[in-house]
Length: 72
Image (tube, rainbow, N blue to C red; front, side, top):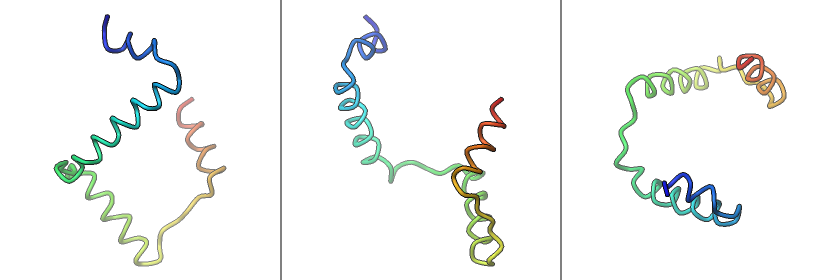
């Protein structure tokens, strides 16, 4: 039986417990993960916009609509 099949057989409670355990393990290794340069560039650009007062924000409803529209 594959790992995916084993997971599919778990109850919701068990799946959540496994997910939390995996997340805990990943978060302990977070310091060893290297951010891709393109991601750092985007974050630096956005931080600059915030610092300069030029950042634009959407409320959640508008953001949700734009996400849904983009995935149609």
